[in-house]
Image (cartoon, rainbow, N blue to C red; front, side, top):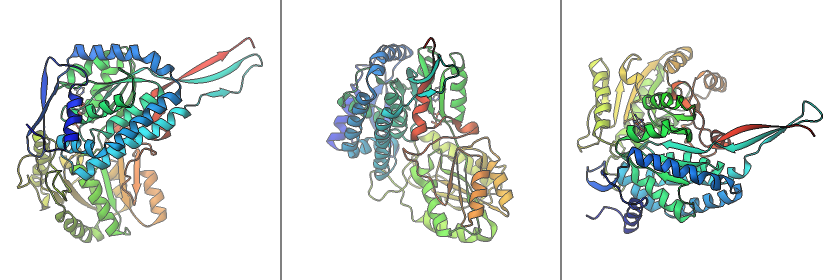
Length: 483
Ligand code: ADP
């Protein structure tokens, strides 16, 4: 069967499929826009995961013993290949994930930026010499790679979420075993092919694809040889993994769900706020953990905001990510559509009104109609749960104090946004919001130089930035006596 992609993309997919040898079992990967079959991918077993960990452990001494400069050189080479193949990688991403091709290409370059950044940071993992407490002693602080890292990644950013974990791990001198999401394993395999082409030694990074996440992931969390787990996904699964990692007291980085408030004050630049709300709500069809989940608008500007926002959403083109001009693709699978729709129907049943959309899209399949709901109340499920779909719930508010309390009234604490031109309010609200990331008149497009991460039940640790590599090193205190 020929795939609806270029020959170069089909070849890279084929190379990925044979990367780790034959598989006893396979599972199919489907195109979310059409439901069409793409490829059969190795369905690795618990034993395969054990083997991957053993090999990653064996590869660790040589990899960590290389100079930072030597590791950096391979990362830079890998970065170059990813950038060079951005178009092809974008095709693979759209094919299995559904996002518009232009967005897929942005993700590839976004992901590549982390490889470049950590290639640079590899050379700047400094220790310390602490002033001595006695004349004949010295106190040194060494930073050493944690060892074998396990990573479990989601389908919404099938390329970027991998490079954001793998690049700092490799830069620090760790080896890593990655279990990508079952919906999007091809992007992970393609990255691994390019890493091998860049000269990354065997077993330093291994991709373990599997249909049954629970079985293989439990090997990763139970293994005493895996010293750190880095996970991006739902809060529910993050909590499970955190519990599983307790027995071996692993270091943890968790990037979990969000319930981002998006607040429009009456002194906001409304056009800019509409543009921001459009970008943060509909990018990746709303399937990002930093998507605006609750839109609070001060009463006096509610009608004006809702009108402009509705007009802007109506103009968005929905379709197959490969179709020219598509701005919103399908959701990832049928279960995702069911989940979004059940939240919408629950809200409608409790008195919310759909001023736009309100159900599945006429295209059928995994397409959901861009939706605006008004009259959403704080206790409706849709205001509590992460929607992960193209649905914008609007709620009016009267005062700053009231909206800050509403915004913080959630167990999540990932991203929050607000729009105001009052400098005093900008500082007050930014400081009062209990979130790891706050965008003031900005929808904080994540980038490699900024620390990405949440507080409360949205996670532990930070990815990207100069803080990102810290999660992959251990601190060792070396006390020197007898001097
Ligand atoms: P989402 O709801 O966005 O799909 P998940 O948390 O379910 O997020 O999935 C993120 C990643 O976690 C995927 O790689 C998935 O295979 C994996 N995963 C899902 N359930 C489990 C589990 N019980 N144990 C380990 N990994 C899991």
